[in-house]
Length: 326
Image 1 (cartoon, rainbow, N blue to C red):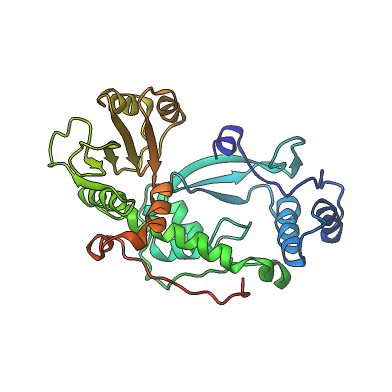
Image 2 (image 1 turned 90 degrees about the vertical axis):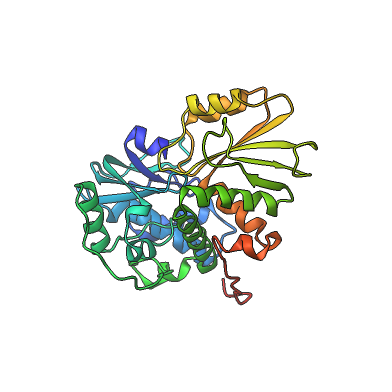
């Protein structure tokens, strides 16, 4: 994402297919992809070809474009400013130049927009009502309210039926489910978020308690194997529930408040800046930074270990998928 924003581009990469400027049509692109992925099945090949064909031939200069940052849960909106080019040597080597104009937090979108945006596993056309909503939010206006119509797991449109059928429904459903879990966690209030993090720690086998509200001297939760802080590891937890990323200064202050024998856990639903992550990496005190993406993963991983009352904040439902249908 930082590469996209700093270099003003969007890009895709599917192996050593080379510059597609001279690949005359879809079949020529398919031939390149088949050489780059000799063991891939027909469905995967078709998905790769569809994305590359859109990058090279369908997207036009002046088109609106969206890309999603799952870590920050932000949609970045811009306008395509250049034709297809090949960035030799780059991992994502098929690119379009983009002028990024604004960003919209996922939490500000209506439920139908969240449901209909689909996954980020492919390149797809955004529905008109979503584009209107994004434009309104970028202009500082409140978009017209819409009633939820439920999730749509398929991409919005497809240039041909073959490409639509090539999308892996299991992978797409799993990605969408992960985003919906993050939506539910993000909707918690500040105090609820502290309770939620404590629940996750209890699911991991620790005895965790939220410290009394008010001045917390750099910690919101205390956790340890015995619940008294006498047995190690003794974990001090800071929880920040906001959209903004935590910077190096905040992380440095948190680490500086830890005592010998403490281990630090800093949870920020808005994520962390690169400098903040560097502060944690070079710290002499063992510390871990957890963003919303990782917090949602941990919740699923230890959900079965939670007590029923701890599941009430963000209840989940088990879904069974028929084997061989993915």
